[in-house]
Image (cartoon, rainbow, N blue to C red):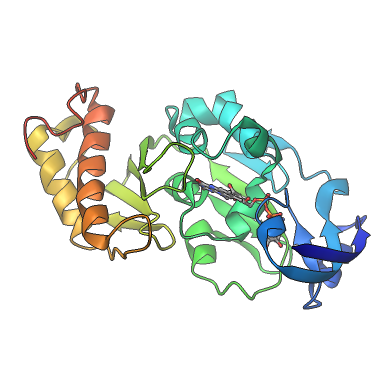
Length: 275
Ligand SMILES: Cc1cc2nc3c(=O)[nH]c(=O)nc-3n(C[C@H](O)[C@H](O)[C@H](O)COP(=O)(O)OP(=O)(O)OC[C@H]3O[C@@H](n4cnc5c(N)ncnc54)[C@H](O)[C@@H]3O)c2cc1C
């Protein structure tokens, strides 16, 4: 159980940051993860009075406030158009609508959970995070930072790039944590895959395949790309799946994602007649 001694709504980010420096004080997002912890909190710092619940955009980027709910992201027309629906696909399996109405993007990314669909898809979207103290950095860099850092995640910045994305995940049962999550995309450097729920934190991988663009996707190249990616990924085992199973699933999902991007029929699970 979580017990809270004092609840405050800071009026400025500076105030929130200063309060967050004390070890027994805790920043609140939607509190969905926090409330599952056994902890005694001195001051709970609620960011809900800081106008961080908005999504703004300009010609270059989207700026998503830390308190924006996962459901708002899932339903956002512009972000979903840009990602070809990959963002909604990543979020729609997380527990249920009521849950996603409360869970925040700030809490989801600050937690840097090893099972995170949110971290996986936003890394594939080349997102940056803005921290009150540390400033703006790539989400990839932030994901590698130690969890003990006490900062305030202010917003997530998503560039309006033309990357094409497909997101796929595998779950043992619907709404459970993913056994494996992956997003495949193309940018100016070629194809990349972000693999999450390994079950470690999401990471981006590239294959050494010269001039491999979306127009080059075939059953054969998709298989080669998937093989080259999984050979670099470190998979682990936990109660949901073994590392070997994750490796197999990852290979199939990456292959399937590429074929889906090409618009190929993946009704046979992207196996295309092969195991
Ligand atoms: C039962 C359950 C199932 C889940 N299944 C999935 C799943 O399948 N896929 C998936 O991707 N996720 C899943 N999640 C995680 C979920 O989507 C949220 O990421 C998680 O609940 C955290 O969001 P929150 O807003 O509730 O954050 P909170 O629980 O409030 O906070 C999480 C952490 O982030 C810190 N924090 C929050 N906001 C900020 C901020 N702005 N700045 C600095 N620190 C901050 C808090 O202090 C805390 O350490 C699941 C969670 C639960 C409880």
